[in-house]
Length: 124
Image (tube, rainbow, N blue to C red):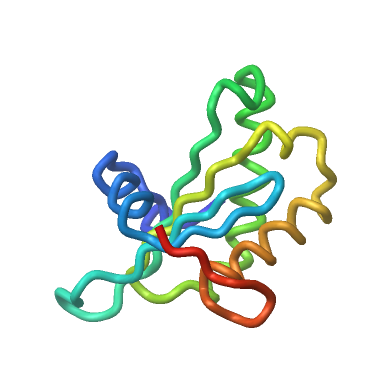
């Protein structure tokens, strides 16, 4: 589970990340990363939120996928800039993927959204 300080809970945080952030897509995921706003008192930890809609499946399927994504992102929190907002949107294609395939797609999309080698960063 992600630390409580690293979870996004407010609708405004999700909206800000999706509207003003960089976007990178993989077949099963879409990532939106909004860089940290002006520092207000030192470096804050990055915040992560998940969007898994009903199109993905029933409640059991959605919650299982959300837990799997949280587990994968917990290991990658250190790659995110301090104070940034990351939204991970799961597509229906994510259902049934092995953890290794999902992790590989997450890594590729994360590299793209961070502007690292491995892909072109998409601006929205």
